[in-house]
Figure (tube, rainbow over the protein chains, first blue to last red):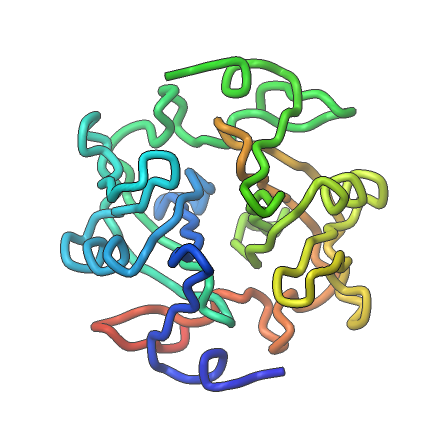
Length: 119
Length: 119
């Protein structure tokens, strides 16, 4: 069940049929999950190059640097890959609220008894 | 830029073309990101029904309850949805190592200068 991708030290992302890996962003300050996005190879390269989180927008079908319009960049402190390299963890310093709604995190609602409530 | 899915209190997951949402699991004890998986509507329903994390395996194309063979279940303490409801945060109590490699978290390698190293 293990292979080089899982045990090795080479970065070898397993992009899905759409050329994407999942990217989870946490706040370096306290580990809170801020958002989930997707990266293609170019977004990953741009993230590494700029030191800020760059994603591929599935809805807009283009690269977007988080905060490019709002200024609320995500400054990358550390990146990790998961066992099969189809997900990336971005540990970042957020330069403002991460969610476009103005919330600190996109996960601002809790599921309780089939309904959502503010977390 | 906001709509009922983002501001409302109805659970209305935005499944992708493959019928999936992304599910991020964190450890209720300290917030560490343990794994990333995917859920279809049935996996989400089973997770809520059983109180344990159930995913849809893209490689095996079937439901799997995390820990069904290892016993390392993820006991769900809280679930959250993100703004556009295409990602779910599962805050759980892990009954053992979450990664099938035996690591506590699937994110056991850090990306440094283009190479991976143990985190």
